[in-house]
Image (tube, rainbow, N blue to C red; front, side):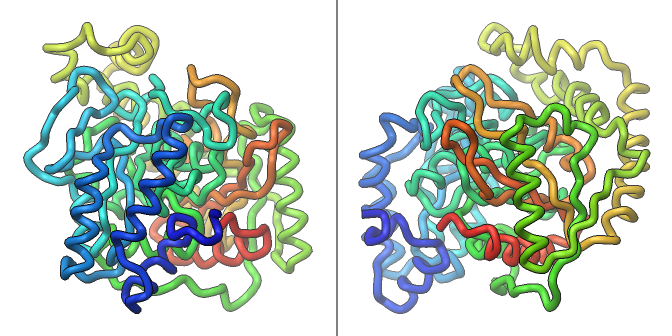
Length: 432
């Protein structure tokens, strides 16, 4: 069934067929909605989805609507972004029924490119650690990761071909790896955060979920309002740094095995693999990320703390970043900021030796249970370094769940990272 239904096709193929008159947006949306109807009781990826509204928007697209690179293509957006025609709850009971008066830029830009916004995907509470109801589409007893839980699960389960998430620590790359899709966290600042509820403004990065590198490039073009140019294969076989990071001992055996196997397969395919580690300036980078996030927490959540503290979870209030942030001083934050700047400079020089860094996106396969979203230890360091990251499916764990690898590029060299990602995807095997 998946190979014959519109919901199983790539975003690039859907856009191509719509432009050629071979498929209507209404037919695509109906197919996606049928998939949601079948699977949503198990996966629970959506915070808001209005079937009739989605169909009405699709029909409007078919009878005119906006032309652009996403013409007629459905997408989902994490419920941390404001939407003018849909409620926005930010994963918190505080905002139940909240109706913003404007679209966030990350919602408006794909719509301006002709995309059809299907609905709002589940987020953890304010994109922090307290999980929502979403389960992993490969096994309902395992986490989908977070905080972009619903976006990763919806794309992995063929409910939509594209979805938007955010990453402050590991909230795009980790759930994408757990759900077996292509997650992309661009260089810091490349995609617009306007209209998004802030988590940590010095780190928050808008990212995407897709099922191929080509679809990722298409969605990126729409979100950046730049011409779409399909990624091309590198003109030479890439030079990759195999970086286990200082957290290698925190990896599960399946994660370690998949990364080592991927390195061997890519070397056999012609890549030059050089074992390398981050420079000394990056030794404490994960702690630096935590200081940024914790210090900004009480300030970014001041409105909720002032009027609705009783509705905040203990995961955020008592046992999370708000309590930790209250213990930090401005001098602590300044020291972390300066250390981050030094680490970024050193990491940039180190990474310039390679076409990309090959590393882990998560400790291994998704953990059992929905009470936590897994460790971000293999993500937070790259987030604070402001570099682009791409995760690709590469194997499976002991429970048959996806295990991925992560490619990391030089800051602002996002195009090059997608080119290398296209090559790696072709050697490891694309998901869709």
